[in-house]
Length: 130
Image 1: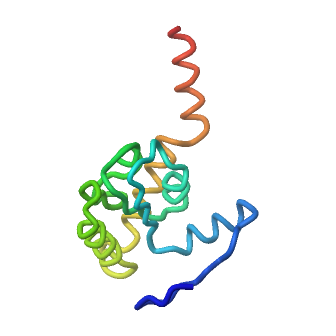
Image 2: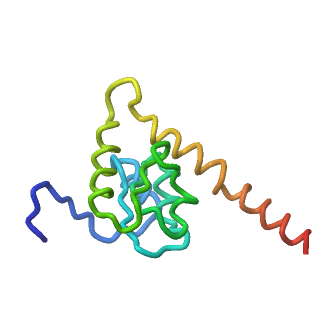
Image 3: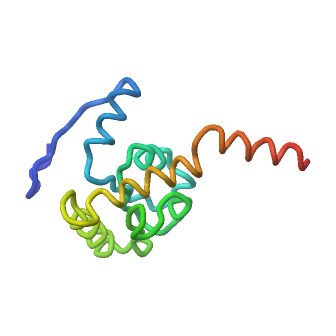
């Protein structure tokens, strides 16, 4: 394991949905530093567990993350801005008047856009249109 300036907690491979949900929910944030991704399930899953996401503004990530509302979208491939986004999200923290607001808004967005009934209805509408 690398020696970084902060603690690392390796969880190993998670084999079930309950463990995955518990880990997402325990995290303060999820960082997705993908350079290319169409719509990563990890971002949707994190939001469904009320976990803000920090990512580059590229691919399908802007379809998941609302900048400074459900997480942070850094300028594409700008690692300094990604680091700033991590600091910004963590500064929103778990205390103060806006504590938990990013996570709450992330959860609401996940329910509104990615819940199974919502997606099923979108598919139904596409098939009816064809």
